[in-house]
Structures are given as structure tokens and as C-alpha cells.
Image 1 (tube, rainbow, N blue to C red):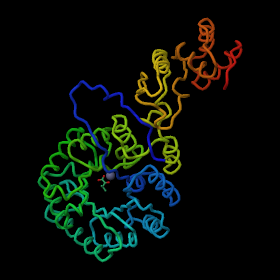
Image 2 (cartoon, rainbow, N blue to C red; image 1 turned 90 degrees about the vertical axis):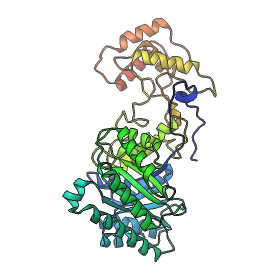
Image 3 (tube, rainbow, N blue to C red; image 1 turned 60 degrees about the vertical axis):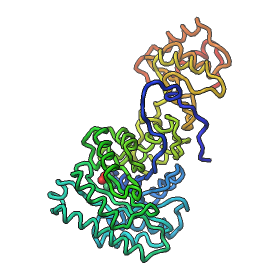
Image 4 (cartoon, rainbow, N blue to C red; image 1 turned 120 degrees about the horizontal axis):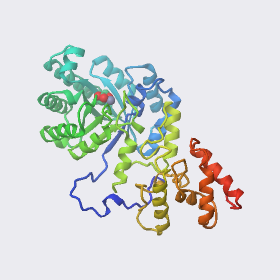
Length: 433
Ligand code: KIV
Ligand code: ZN
């Protein structure tokens, strides 16, 4: 069942500082199977893609970009398989990417034939560098290419009324595009699609390469939000990349600046330094008391599936998901945590020092919270032993164990845990391990 335990956020429970914050979750779009996949050493085969697709559906994504079907036969076949084998849950809409060129758009719509609902995602670059260097086109030509592409998709999709079609238009390199031109393109493609409040167009404003501070991106989004014509007929979407390491902050500020949809990947997979990490973004909302609408209540399962499908590994300090993110080794931290656990009352708000929220909320246990290494203290040792022992360990015995256990500071925690248990048992402390 997709449900978090009741949760009272500590950070905001008793706010005194003036602040603004995000009060509701955005529309999420996972591009794990497109932006994430295209950036892997070895892109996923169909079985892995399918396994990750199912993981994304289980997490609760309702919009999933599954492929770039005009770019490869493998991608085309994958989209066909999802549709032909009826593998798409009723409440999930698949999305596919295409450049704004006629043959590619025709192939894209062909890939989607028979889908219950689909988003055609057209992209073209709009910044001066890309116009001049890559496309060799003027502003007028780029604008015409965009409008022609939208009109063609509108016409092709009108011939396939059994599918519920939606359109997304992305201004690749948006953040390096002149504001007046960005507005001109957005307004022209909205008009070409005939966007209305009942048939909104998704306008996606990527930081295709993140080169500016998060507040600058947010300023750009805010400006677009307040200058786009027919704002009520537009879903304003962001697609932050992480070249400066600030994609999560960029997405958060962009949401506060008027965006209502975010595209990204699990654990920040994606081109170069990746797309924005949707796990961190969602759980950041969660720990602020905002229901994210995505279920990470078994984070270990998400990590396992992600690693098996992509061949990447989730680092030990990855927010919310890494092996060490709920672990304290140092003596003073362990002492504070031990006091926090001892003071807990059933039903009370989570208030354990150094642990920003209850690890159980993401399906993690408490056994990894206190581990020992050469920096640990007696508090940690006592906690570790007592959690495997019925009563308290006496002070004198603790001192002896403390002295004995740290003979070799170079040993890793797993070894020290083991050594500690052996010494304790040698002193007649019967542990349940
Ligand atoms: O980063 C980017 O600009 C993209 C577009 C296709 C949206 O991935
Ligand atoms: Zn991208």
C-alpha cells in the first residue's frame, strides 16, 4: 500500500524565522528511461528498461518519458512493446521525445499508435550559440521550425482520436536564450497547439547545462511565469541539470517561482552530472511536511532496482538512500542519539538529535544508526551492546570493553562491531545476535 506513516516535521513544527516554502508537490515526470538511459555507459536493454519502468510506476510516477523512438530501433521497439503488450497502468501516461523535424515526428507518432494516452515531447534548441553554431539558423527559422513541428503533430494526432494526446514543447538551452525570444517561441507553440485551460500545453524550460546559481534559474522561471500569454493554458515545467551540483536547489526555487512540474531521474541519473535527483526532491518535501505523492517507503528496494537496471551504484552518502545516511560513528553524536532514543514516547514527534527524520519512514531499521569505528565513544558501544542484550551494561565493564575494542584503529566498522561482540561475550555478557 502506498502510504507513509503519519509524520510531524520537526523543522517546521515551531517556526519562528520568517520564510516562504513549497506547500504542494509538483507534477512529477521521470525521464529515467530517456535522459537517464541515454547517459549510461551501457544503455539498458528492454528487460532492464521494463523493470525500471515498473519500479517507477510502483513509486507513483504518472508521467514517464520512456524513449526517443525516432533515434533508435531499440527505443522504438520498447515503446511498441509497452503498448502492444498492454504493460502501461491505466493511470500512467507515457511520453516520448523527438526533435522538431518532420520524418522524426512521423516516426514518433507511429511509435505511439494505439496508446491509451501519450505525451509527444518536441525539443529544439533556442539559444544563440545553438542557433548559430549547431543549427545554422536565424531566430525566425528556429521559430518557424518549432511552429511547423507543433502543427504537424497536431494534425497527425487529430487523425488518431483513440489516443488521448498531449504536447510538451522544450526549449533546449532555455537558460541561455534571450528572454524575448523564449517568450516568442512559447507563445507561438501554445497558439499552434491551440492550448486552452482544458487542453494545456506543457512548456518545459530546461537548464540543459547548469551554469548559474539556483536563484538565477528561479528568476528566469518567474519571469516566464509572469510574461507567458495564456498562462492558464500552460503547465510550466522545469528540467534542471546538475552541472554545478545545485539541481535540487534550482528545482525547489523554480517551484517557488511559479513552475508546477519537474522532470528528473532517480538518484540524479542523466547526462553528465545528471538530472535533478527526484528522490531527494520528493523526500525534501516530505520532511517539510508536504506529501510528495511518490512512495519511497521502501528506499532499499528502489536502490536495488535502480542499481540492477542502470549498472550505477548509489553512493553511501546519497541523501535519504545511502548506506551511511542514518549512521553515527562519533562518540558525541552517538551519545546524543542514544539520549534521543531513550526520551522517545509512543506517538510523539520525531526529535532524535542528528537524525533529521525517522529512518523507518523510508523503510530503514535502527540497527545501522549507531556503528563503531575508531572515533566512537562509550555511549555508542553501550547502545550497540544493549540493543542486543536485555539490560544495561555496567560502567566498569563498559570501560574495559572500550579500551579493548580500539586496539586497531585502522579496522573498518564491521570488524570492530564483531570484535566488540566477541569481547563482550568473553566477559560473560550474553548477547542475542
Ligand atoms: O536537457 C535538456 O535540455 C533535455 C531536453 C530534451 C528537455 O534533455
Ligand atoms: Zn536533459
